[in-house]
View 1 (cartoon, helix red, strand yellow):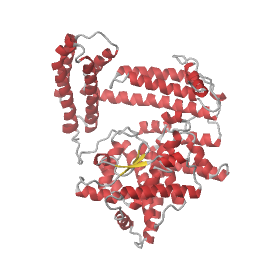
View 2 (spheres, rainbow, N blue to C red):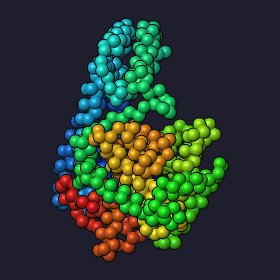
View 3 (cartoon, rainbow, N blue to C red):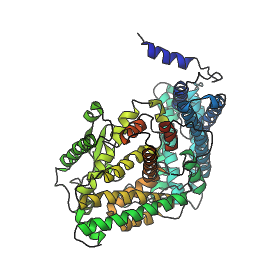
View 4 (tube, rainbow, N blue to C red):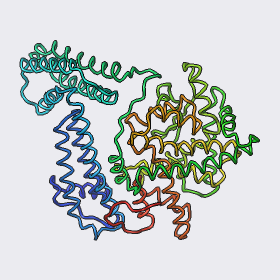
Length: 563
């Protein structure tokens, strides 16, 4: 039996027609039913049109976004309340951003197409299967044979292929191989004539796709799955960075953000000299970092060290009454030690699914890597990483976002997700979380690292900094071990994160710090009230979060808040 609340929620969804001509009635507080419907329908289309490299998917999603643009524009924005306006702007920005992302994807696919001209025909096979068209084994076999010949002809052509394009195309070939396997698995054993005709040409094409992918990856890009692989990324350029910044509602150019990073970096260097002097090392900051790196837990004790830091941070927050901590949030966290493979991309701690991944060298690591991992995950570096990942950082944030306005999670921004955790590093610094100059050195190391992330990641996407220069910067300017610097850069440019993700830590933290100062100056809320309010709005762009906690009604305009 459905509760009244659940019945009402379902009823609010089904009143929408398939063409979205009659959007649900907005409330002053939110457009939650509308946004939930959008997310459900978008997910349904993505699950249905799941063939990689598919023009059908691209066209269908473009039409879907156009339909929703009409729905959104049909709402009278001026009559919406603050929460509903924020929801409107979230969907508006998302639709525009997805259009821009689709254009970038189409451009990159066009660059790959001369290398894989057979791709559309292979995709068409799978899409015909999805439409349950009558199978014809003899015709299928002829198609597979022709695809093999096209593949061989494409490989035979002499081209000057960049490592970036080679690696991107290798990944596309891997996707095409998955599409081919899905297509064949549907018929194999169920349609004997298809199997009889297609088994041999299918196996031949499958091998050729794998071999072509391997050649592009290993011979052209020189990526062989080894620790010394070259670091290869796919920079997007200044115009795409500006479009992404507009989506995140950041009214700054990449160059202005880099200036902000240099300003914060200078502050860190000044504070580092102060801590170094307290350690009796004059202004030799490199010596201070070196000493701190030697102060690490013994083998078998890192998890115990981190668990103690978690409990200490919880007690610190409660003693200083900085944020509301629900008992279930405090109860439901755990630790997990990171594997060697994970540490190739995540050399420090990370958060995922109510657990903190704890980095520490493993027995099978090379001796040099083991030493560097020990030094990089020392006690004083880890002391600020732990609250960043768990409480009051990502664990608290994730717990609350699943319980307050969860329908906004689809529009999550790293400027709030990572900015929240970085903001708390700033708060803990101001509230004397550090017990010693060594603790301050550890905190400053990470703060400098966040500044460096802005400089190296934007430099990479502006095409002014190579991966090798990025590594050197992290080693020489910040004080990273080369192993961890290389792992960091591999992650920065690997494509699993958005181009602005590395900026988001420090810039989001600065936004939240500016918001806290505004609220403190106006005496509208206590610091604890502000923190609780922020946690109740979802992981949305901070300019919109500012409107929510101040009660101001945002207007339709470009990003404007210069923090």
